[in-house]
Amino acid sequence: MDIRVGDSPQRSRFEIFADEEQAGFAEYHRYEDEIAFIHTEIDPRFEGRGLAGRLAREALDTARAQGLAVLPYCPFFRGWISKHPEYADLVPAAQHERFGLTAAQA
Image (cartoon, rainbow, N blue to C red):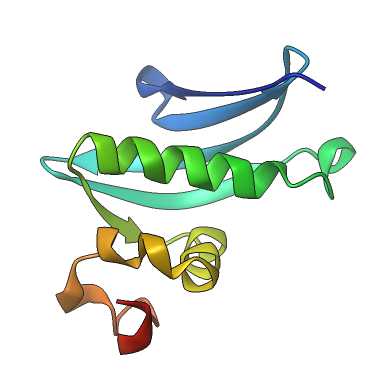
């Protein structure tokens, strides 16, 4: 399966495609130097293939490359960052408690 993730700024979301079919998306709101992830969906036909994790990783890598602070309002992104502490530094330290990130994840 050919997987591709792309940013669709006009729709304020990152989209993931599997063999050219949209499999899911992560909606965001961007303001100045912050990006707030607010909702993630994977089409049920594509669940269980690791696509949501791939989508999160590529969206967060893009945020890092653009120097953006991440606000993970989306429960999936919040949980994914908790499980991948190498991304916790994207969330401003003052916001870690708000999003349930422990000091060990910082």
